[in-house]
Image 1 (tube, rainbow over the protein chains, first blue to last red):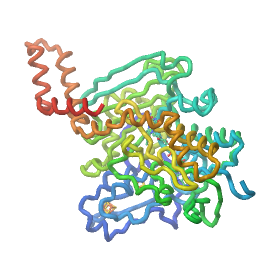
Image 2 (image 1 turned 90 degrees about the vertical axis):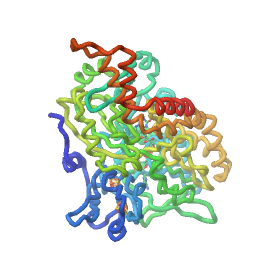
Image 3 (image 1 turned 45 degrees about the vertical axis):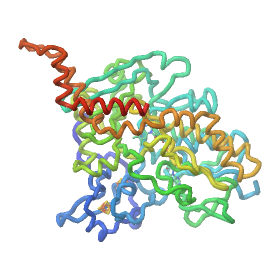
Image 4 (image 1 turned 90 degrees about the horizontal axis):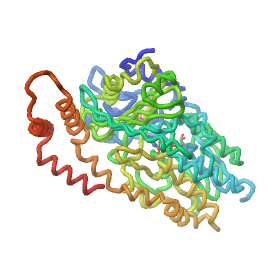
Length: 97
Length: 426
Ligand SMILES: Cc1cc2nc3c(=O)[nH]c(=O)nc-3n(C[C@H](O)[C@H](O)[C@H](O)COP(=O)(O)OP(=O)(O)OC[C@H]3O[C@@H](n4cnc5c(N)ncnc54)[C@H](O)[C@@H]3O)c2cc1C
Ligand code: SF4
Ligand code: SF4
């Protein structure tokens, strides 16, 4: 009942997801990301699905994807090799947006 | 139509698709309306505010049945800096009279309702279906594919939104550019209805819409706030290209905006209940692809990149509805599917969608002035602080004080240049 700054996890925790465990709807080629300098996906994906791991590599996790399309349009080096919507009945379901 | 061929298959039950399916079904056409959400609206995020005239065009009085939130009678523009905010508040009860000009809306409710209206007119509505391909025969689009299934129609209407994978598959246009869209992030915050009315100075059922400038760390874009029934929609739209070039995550900038004292005071005591994100067409008239149809196929709404953003007004849902209506009228008037494209163009003109897009066609250029998103809002607040501060010390002469503030934030040369640029673009 109070408004506070929400962490990335808390923000996604507000939403309802049905994760398609066996089928990623977005495919990211780590080898391409490894040589990518600009990496706009790291700050522009509203769900923070793209993060740097300890080794400084770009890690992609599709589970919290909000299906907006931002990564596809900002990707500078073509690391997002395939972008689709999740299969029927999977992904996020908004109730009050 | 033959037994297993629909007059039209409409892909996407957003405002564009449902307006199209509604109109076709009402004319007795066989329509299949598909959406990938478990229910229509489940995948959709908007600001948002819907301008009522569009529903009136589909059918007078239709809006009275819609699950609308509050009729907007307060239009607010907030210029922010780190410390405070200067808000212009235009109250016009006339906006709420007769057919109210606009309402705040929640898409899950609005879209499900509109698809239901199309169904009541006789459209076949199927949520939970992802269309993943088109069937093409002899250069014509004759249907859609979903998984193993194929469905056929004289015309396929792509109402599949800003990412329009179908429009791309049909070869009408390449993928949208990052510079031509905005990425919107939004929290829905529940708050008692009476509290909302009191905080925004409106009566029950009436509401405020606010745009905020200066909350994007200098990135081209702006904040928004809409009052709903028992909730507030709060968000920011960023130019993704510029967002990607700096180092702060857009989520963090958004949380700063939410926690800014001028915003926080309005939502305090509320509960965050949802976080969403979505792209929005930002280029206006110049973003509309040259080709909006081919034999057996038309694109409507965001898929056609219709949209108007003047910085003060944001329009997409109304244009989606008008274009869906235009496509339906074209399909109804066409003697053969091949005629639909030309008739659709004519309808877009007749329904004044193109004229509306053209009226603001150069506005996008204004947003190339980066100072609009940081320096000018800061200047406005510094000026206000100078005008209102009383501390017993010797005040600077008025004119000198104000000129100093201008100088501190922008140079006079830039100010003149920007003024000229804005003048040329409006
Ligand atoms: C943050 C933000 C704020 C906005 N604020 C406003 C505002 O205040 N006022 C305003 O008028 N506009 C606003 N807009 C713009 C407005 O939301 C859009 O213009 C409008 O939603 C477009 O409607 P549409 O029907 O064309 O597309 P959408 O509403 O995007 O609907 C497309 C539908 O197609 C479905 N779909 C997509 N692909 C497939 C597929 N392959 N198979 C099956 N189904 C599919 C989706 O599930 C979706 O339901 C805003 C947008 C954003 C992002
Ligand atoms: S579609 Fe949007 S939410 Fe999903 S990974 Fe891409 S940028 Fe992130
Ligand atoms: S911008 Fe594209 S290529 Fe670069 S790191 Fe991100 S996903 Fe990989």
